[in-house]
Amino acid sequence: NAGVTQTPKFRVLKTGQSMTLLCAQDMNHEYMYWYRQDPGMGLRLIHYSVGEGTTAKGEVPDGYNVSRLKKQNFLLGLESAAPSQTSVYFCASSYLSGRDTQYFGPGTRLTVL
Amino acid sequence: AQKVTQAQTEISVVEKEDVTLDCVYETRDTTYYLFWYKQPPSGELVFLIRRNSFDEQNEISGRYSWNFQKSTSSFNFTITASQVVDSAVYFCALSVEGGGNKLTFGTGTQLKVEL
Image 1 (cartoon, chains in turn brown, orange):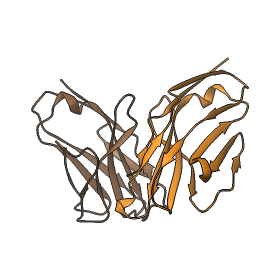
Image 2: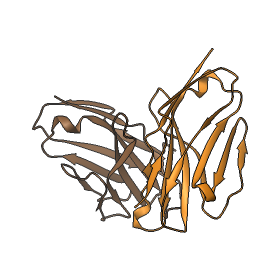
Image 3: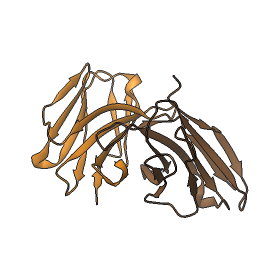
C-alpha cells in the first residue's frame, strides 16, 4: 500500500516550457487535490476533484490545468511555466467528505528559471 | 470564507521543555473539522489529529495533547517534554462540509528543539 505518490520528485524548467505532474493514490479515495507550498504562506489549493472525470478550481488556479481521467490519478499541468510557479507541489487525497482526513504525497519541488 | 491563523512563526525551546502551538480559526459554518499536520525537515506532511466541531473533548496521545475551545475559536497543540525529533513545521488546518472538502491552512509554526 503506497498511499499517495507523486512523480517527479524534482524538476527544473525554463520559462515557457510545459510539464505535467502525476499524482497516484491506491486508497480508492474519491477526492483528490493539488496544493502549492510557498515560504511563509502555508499550503494553498490549486485545483481539486470530487470524483473521476470532475475537476474544480481552488484558491490559486491560474496558470494550471488538471485532469482526472482515472479515479486513482490526478494530473497537474503547466502549459507555459513562469518563475512565479517555482514552488513545492503537494497532492492529497481523501475518502469523501469534509470529515475525512486528507493524506499527502511526498511533494514535487519545481524550479522555473 | 474560512481562515486559520498561526501567529507564532517560529518557536525555539530546549529539549524537555513543554511547548504550545497556537491555532485560531474563523468560519461561519456550524459543522467543521480541524486538523494538525507535521512537516519534518524531510518535507512530507504527516497527519496528527482531526477534530470535529461537535467534539470539544481534549485529546492526549503520548506527549501530544490538543485543546479545542469553541468559545475562543482555538485549537492549540501542546508537546510535553519536547525532543529534538519534534523539530518541524506544524500546520493547523480547517475544512467544512461541502465545497469539495477543501483544507484551509495556517501559515505554519516552525518549532526548533535544541539540546
